[in-house]
Figure 1 (tube, rainbow, N blue to C red):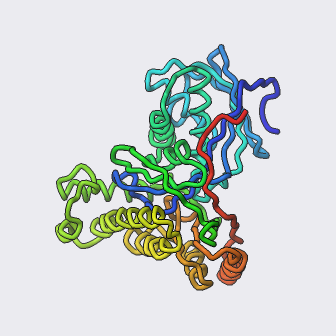
Figure 2: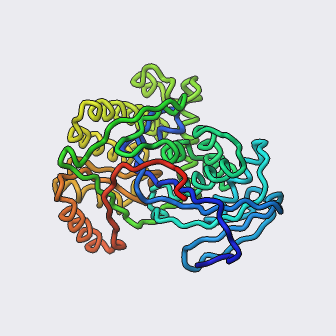
Figure 3: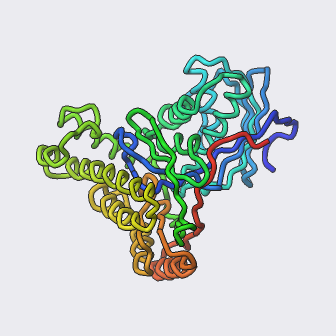
Length: 372
């Protein structure tokens, strides 16, 4: 294992990655989202230090350990995976909390770069640990905001709160219906197996990198559209059709249209799940992908191939998940058909010269918690 050897953890905390069933790029527009936590998680073994030092290590082969003074932490001081746990301590101190040093060793099986929130899982696990060890008494929403600030201010990606709220707030066997305007949420039963279905995750292994500006550009477009419409955010638009007609034809109108229609899709999916009709959500997933491909323009050839191939093999619905520009797709398939769908996607990728994809079935898992 990489890193320091003189390490005694006070405990182990875990936070999961997430799959967003539907509701993409709506969180920073104060809209609706519907994620589930996945069993894959980031685990942080953490020990409190009294000398003001932060030591970081990872079980990932080749990862270097870091030893830095907590007082020296600042945006840009660390890069790569180390920025996320370090950013938690920085964000807590910046918010006025009395936080000193720590030893942190990370172990994670959330696929990196797959659009499954590996970075949020890491930040949330560390935030939960430091909150407990330093007896800060923060609630889950406050911890989510700290983890969000790690990404926006320390790392430099202007994300919404979807990933952090999902990692900290999801419940096993349920999807988390969250209103990002006031951060009120409710748990919605999501039992694919009981409906004779599986939710297949297709990691396209296409490069997924949000720091390059595509994500920030989409967010800026939405903010500009809201400004032109005279509202604080696109969520506050009362008449989407009139708003779209008022926006100039072009990217701003298309970005806004995705947000309006995606919010409506989330509400329809929640209604279907509460009625126990899991199969009914398939067309909404597919419509979501078309909207992200055509209006939000965040898909890529690998994601389109995964979605189109899954649908061609009989999937009830499929779409990209996460920020886009690579990463993963999901496909809602009949139980027992996951293997056939995966095989078809593998063949389609090989025929196009893409990297071989990876697959797993998503099962709604528990949110962040202490595990040791």
